Structure formats: structure tokens, C-alpha cells
Length: 253
Image (cartoon, rainbow, N blue to C red; front, side):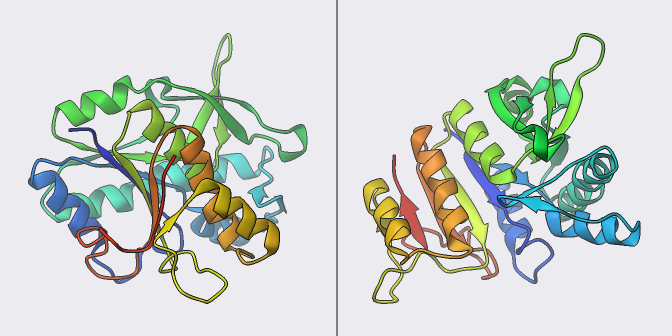
């Protein structure tokens, strides 16, 4: 069975839901998922404690030489191990890795103005496939690498983009974005249960899809462009993963 990729958003990390129990239950039932996460809010808190200013360009964190070590430590360390520990405590076996481990997520520098921010150019899925074959849940943080002659350069990568690229490389049966909304709403205010790519672009252009919903939908369109069906659901709701059929908004390629 092709795996399901689950992107856990920062807005749902640590919320009082059943996400980690649901992930564990899937694995225990023989349907081992892949989890992808970022951790931007936690990184911002640590940067503030260290008196390092957080700056953003086009929604991406400017990651200079002072910011990068903090982002790597928080994403690959603190946040990753919290998720791993929570899934393990729920009875499954999870293993935390980054996109730099096993050279999973190869990138190029996205923009000189952004510093050490990566844009995926290739996914080498063997580390993830090995974990899945062993019945273990890969928990992947959004740190990638730019290949170097003597040492690879670690880079910060948008977690939603990482999730789409990994889902495509694994030929996943779907990608679920756990967010803090119950779906994409149309002009009448009702949740759109299935959204076509052309209609999504029209709703963005007309302003019906606006604000923080734009990047969520654009990430679904990115996944669709890679041939992956994605779904936006409310990750704050107990049992959201186990009751996802018919919930939220589905975007097909």
C-alpha cells in the first residue's frame, strides 16, 4: 500500500488533539504513514530569547548565518524529538530524520536575499523507504542540504513544499495538510469539499481565497503539479485523521 504523507502545521503542533495517537493507530493497523513538519513558531521563540530578529520575505524566513543554527537545532532537535516521543508513547515506533540525513532532500539556494533557504531539486527516498519497510514511522523535519565538495550545506526549506516533494517521490496515495482551518471556503462561506486546480486559481485571483489561506491552497497546487492528491483538514479536531474522508477540502491533480 502506498503511504499517506501527513504534514503537521505549526498551528496544530502541541494542540490538544489526537493527531499523534491517530498516527500511531494507523501504523499499528499496518498503514504506516510518513510525517513531515516544520516548527517556525518554536524557532521564532528561541530566536527572540537569543535577541536575534526574525525577518521574512514573501512568507519565507530569512535564514542567515545566525539564524540557521537555531532553525536546525529547533527543527531537527527539539520539535522533531517531541513529535517522535509523542508517537512512540502512543504505542508505535517513530524515527526522526531531516532532509539532510541520507541525503534525502537535495536542494539549491532559493534566493541570495533569503540566505540559507533551500528549494528542492531532488528527493532520494531510500532512507524513508527503509524505515517504512521496517514498520517505523519516518518523522521528517524541513531541513535539506545543498551538495558540497567537502561538506553539504544545511538549508531551511518550507515544510509544505517538502511534504509535496516527498509525497511525489514516494508515489504516496495522498497528502494531508493538518491546519487550523476546516477547509477552503467559497464566496458563499461554505467549505468547498473538492476544489479543482483551475477553480482554485480563479478564487485566488478574485480575492475569495485570501490572506493566510492563499499559501495553504498554493501548497495544494504545488502538490497537484507533482501528481499528488492533497487535502486540507482541521488538525485541532480530535480524530481528524481517522475521520478525514469527506472532511475539509480535497485538491486533485
